[in-house]
Each structure stands twice: as structure tokens, then as C-alpha cells.
Image (cartoon, rainbow, N blue to C red; front, top):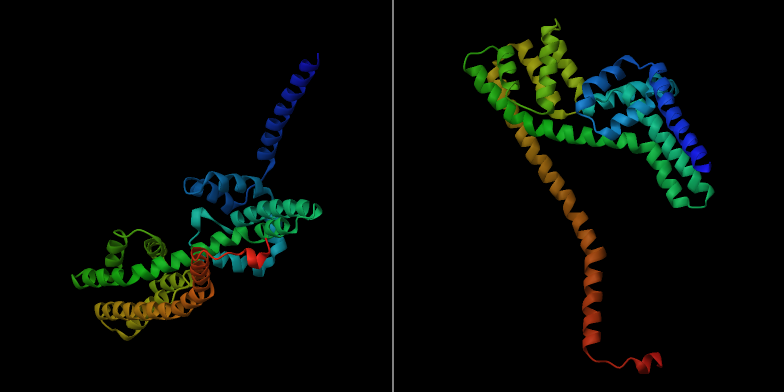
Length: 296
């Protein structure tokens, strides 16, 4: 009898879970760009992120209202700079922030009540910052890839333009041979021009979407060359040389900053540890009788 009741309760529980999930998915209204992100980004997002988006989609509008217009604009800008990794949009970001914030806050509160303050702080930090960690990392990686790709791209573009193609056709031809964030940005720019946006406005939007000095140099040089009537090939070649010179200067600057850090690490940790190891080896190898010192 007990087994029958237990089986009935388990069956009702499973049915209730499936019914609840079905009602939840039927009633939830997805924001427009979150629907697009879930459809377009489904193949580029892991199973965990997709599950988190599904769980938090109901609360995304509430999170956006709590953030306020200024914060929403700020994070929308960050997502643009990150290149919308995995189909990320501002609504999808809000959905993840709701889920991770709840998990971190709830777990942190439990450990705080238990007196485990270290784990509580870690969980609170997870809830507050985990969503931003992926964006910060994507911004840095994307910026490095674009700045590393741009000089070679300009050299190839200059060769294609000097062969007789117009700038628009050459840009399309060279962009189709590249992959990565810079090629994606150029395809967006070309698509905007196809939809009627002027070349100047499209490249201004390109500069706005990228927080890179080299991209800003590229757009500024093109716009100034267009205004002054300078040959585009000479502009591209000179720009590529300037970018490579800037990259070399930045590399030397990073190396100069790394030397004091490496020296500090060596003198703080490695030298004392080596001295202790050598001293202990000499002392143990000398056969000294420590009984006279310890009294044992």
C-alpha cells in the first residue's frame, strides 16, 4: 500500500513538473530581440547559456527597468564592443543577470546564515559580476584580434584597389576572404551601405562599434582622404605602416612594464624559497646533531 501511494505521488509530481513547464513556456512573452537571439544564436551558444536564457527571459524586462536608461545604454554599448558574443543582446544579458543574481544571492545568503563568510562573499560576487566577466573578456579578445588583422587587411585592400577595382567593390572582395570580428564588422558596414546609408555614416558607425585606436585611425584617414581627394592607395599603405609602428611601440611598452613585475615576483618568492631550500639541504646534509638544541 505504501509503495502504491509513493508511486502515485511521484507520478503526480512528474506530471505537475511537465504541466508547469508547459504553462510557463506558453504564458511567457519574449522580447523581440531576445526571440531573435534565441533563434539566431542557438547554434553559437552552449547548452548552459541557452538554459539560463530560458529561465531568465520572463524577468529580463524587470531587470532592464531596474537598471534604468543610462545603464541600459552603457551595457548595450559594451555588448556592441564585445561583438554580441553567442548572439548576446541587451535582453539576453538581462535574463542572465536575473538568473545568476538569484543563484548567487540565494546561495550566498544560505552560507552567510551558516557562518561561512568566504563562500558567501564568493557567491555574492558570482551573482553580481559573472555576467560581466564574459563581456569584459570578449571585448579584450575582440579588440586584440581586430588590431592584429587590420594592417594586413589594409595591405591587401591597397593591392586590390591599385589593380583597378573601386573602393566599394574592393572592400567587398577582400572582406569575403577574411574571417573573424573584423570581417564581420566590414560585412555590417557594407550591408548598411547597401540599405542606403552613406559611406561616411556607415564608417562612422563602424568606429562607434569598436573601441580601438587603429579602427578610429582607419575611419578618420578614409574620411579625410575623401574630403581632400587624396589617392586611396597611398592612404591605405601609409596607414598600415603607421599601425605596424604603433603595434611595435605597444609591444615594447608592454615588455618594459613586464620586466619590473617579473623582477618583483622573483625577488619576493623565488629567491627566498631557493635560499631556504639550499639552507635546509646544507643543514640536513651536514649531519648536525640537533638534540643539544632541542633537548631531546
